[in-house]
Image (cartoon, rainbow, N blue to C red):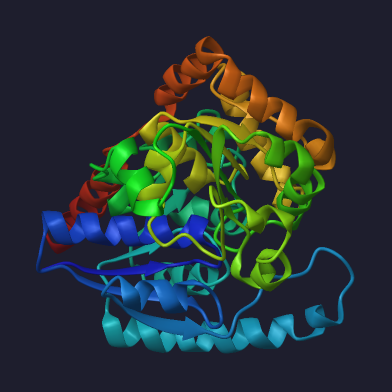
Length: 368
C-alpha cells in the first residue's frame, strides 16, 4: 500500500490537477492512502474535502513582490508552517510527496526532502513557478505540460505528461443540444462562454459591460457569463441581465456542461483552463491576466497562438477588441474550425494516469 502526500494549491489551476492526480492514483491502486496539505483560507480547503479527500492546512502566504507590511509576517508564518509540516510528515509517513505548486507545497516538500522521502513536482505552466524551481534540484521527477522547461528544471528529471484535468471534463459525454437544454438556452443560437477563472476577472467583466450595447445587438447568440462570486452582486442586475439568453452566474459548478454548450470561449490563459480547452477542442479568445508571476499566462497563451490554436487579446485592450474577436469567430466558420483543430495538439487525456504511474513506480522502488 502506497502513502502519498499531495501538497499545494491557492487557485483552481493548482487544486483541480491535484485532485485529478489523486483520483488517478485511486483508480490504479485503490488502497493508496492520500493526504492533501494546503493553505488555510484558500480554495483547496473547500474543494479537496468535497472531492472526498482529507486535507491539513498550513498558515502560509506568499511573499509579496511589492513593498507590503504583510511581508513582515512572512518569516513567522513560514517558520510555523515548517514546524507543522514536520508534524504532518512524521505522522503520515508518506512514501512520496507530490508538489503541484502554490504556497503550501514549499514547506511540505522541503521537509520531505530532509527526511529522505522521494518527491515529484507537477508544473502546470510554460513559465515555471518559484516554488517548483526551488524544489526541483532534489525532486525525483518533474512532470510538465509545455516544451522548453529545461531552462528551469534538470533535463534528466523532466517528464512530459501534460496537465491533468478534472474528471467531469475528461469524461465529458454531454453534447451541445443536451448542454443548452440543461442551461435553458436557445438551441438555434450559437453560444459564447465567458469566464475569468474560478474567482472571476474584473477586466473581463468590465470589458463585457462596456460592450453591452453591441452584445445586446447580437440577438442571434446565447451568452454564458461567469462573473465570479465576489463580483456577482455588482453585475447580477446590469443591463445584460434583461435578456433571457444571457446567463449571468457567480460560479459554474458543471464546467463540462458550459464547455459543451459553447461555440466560442473567452477566458484567462491559466494552465488548467488551456488544458481543458485543448481536451475539448474549443475555439478560444484568451485574455492573459497581468496579475500573475512573471506574466506566465501570456507565455501560456503564446504557446497556442504560435501554433494557430487560439486568439490572444491583451488585458489592456479587452474593451476595444473583445467583441470584434468574438464576432469574427462566430461568423467565420473556417477560422473557428482551424482553432478547434489546432488546439487539439495540446490535449493530453492521459496526463493524470501518467503522473500517477510515475508516483506509484517511485513508491514501489522505495519499498523494494
